[in-house]
Length: 288
Image (cartoon, rainbow, N blue to C red; front, side):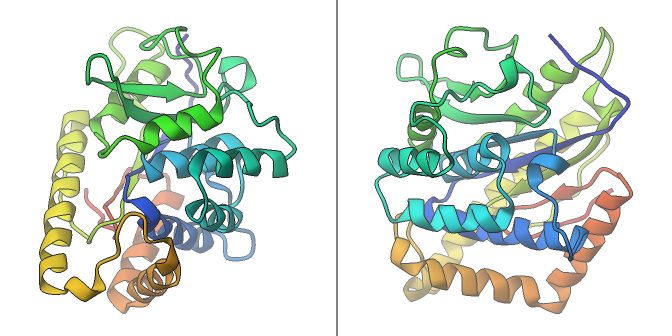
């Protein structure tokens, strides 16, 4: 059943990238700190829907379903990156005093912050999602039986995230009536990845947003591949958990540059004024 209120809708999308997902968390941490340095908000209190695939799906479930601060999520993410995924997730749930077979479903299917992760159907090779909420698009087939660790394992096999999917899903969940468009109530779309920064303007309407998201993801992948060819000794693989310190150092250095800080502050200012803006992969861009 669709829900609607007078509040504007904020969406957070997190791409894959193995242990390099730590860079996504560090960027998100910087954004939250800039919103309130003394008491950074939890993403679950700031975003209406959080979604992701692969390592981004792992982070999405942690932030949206288990609801830690970004700082606490970073600590847990480091532990998970050094362990077998299924056992690592079960151990995390036990530390949180939750059953290791806790369902992904939350609050009888209607949590305030909704979470989903993307995976690929073995039978049809189509994209499927595992939601923490009831979705009329995907029905009840897995809603009452998918456990958190199963969703994490399923999304870890997904190699890419199709950003327009979040637009379709949000439109389905939040549509109050026929004729309504997500544009009417969209506050912002935040998409954070693990690649190299890219800036793409987007036109009016959801179609423009979706096209810009695809262009950003493609450009980030191409630039990252070019950087890898030119600097082979600096590449960080998807499973190189022993290089988490390098990931943090590189991301922090990137975020500390004057131009990036200016972009972060500009984005935070516009988010605080509840205007619609787009964040790009491993970097930030502000587009009208």
